[in-house]
Image 1 (cartoon, one colour):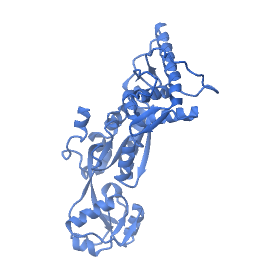
Image 2: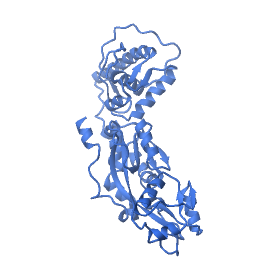
Image 3: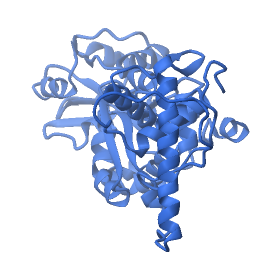
Image 4: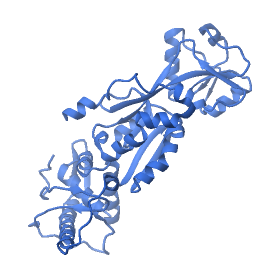
Length: 366
């Protein structure tokens, strides 16, 4: 999308390796005003983001063109605006358009990019050639991931060290949430996070990939009779953890029996487990949340079993970003997840359960 109000001509942009900007641009005809003050502390990634957004009229399309996450482009533009002390783009439903100050700044940004390209070619002409970058070296910048806490604890935290060693220029930023759905869906849809991990399904316009299924369990004090029927379930004191999964559990119980009547409502799962261990009632949590099961407790399925499908979710644009694809391949592949599940591998459902990614057809046709 091109903004007819902009006087800045479009130009091809490509990023190859951290901090390397390759542009081939004609010298602009417009006279540029000198920017006052000290030399701005801007780098090639700022220039690439500014030019990419100006050319495409979209932060997401600029990210796709540059091969980085949308959050990387947004942060680079915000940093440039902060450094220059002015707003460079107007953001709205119809896209992103340069402000009058942005138009003036982009003239200089394009000239700076062209000068850097000339500098690189001059070095190459002198016989100083850079070896081809490896794929791992091409990835850089922040990757924002929002996830429910149990997935962070069991699958993400153990994998971060290996991922960072493989992609040292990538900064993984984790956002935890007690919810498994609404907060994750909102942050991904708004662009606050590049990738979400939580309970499916989510909005149909998002790209979802099921990863595994995790069972909800009754957790009670050891030695207490098991609640094998719904009548027994309703007679006991139900301690509810008021997180995103509580309505999901209640709907399942109502479908098979009648809506539950909680005896206690709590926010924190660990507080609920403490009350259960003291004999004040039972609670319902997923296996990942209660594992490893504290001493003095027992866990078993509901009278009608209930599972949650945990998956990754991203916008269609973000699902094609190299950073997101690399993280999914290294951390979220079935083999990687199964390896990190350890003793839980036999209790989670990894394969033979899920269809193809819901976004596969949309991505292929876009």
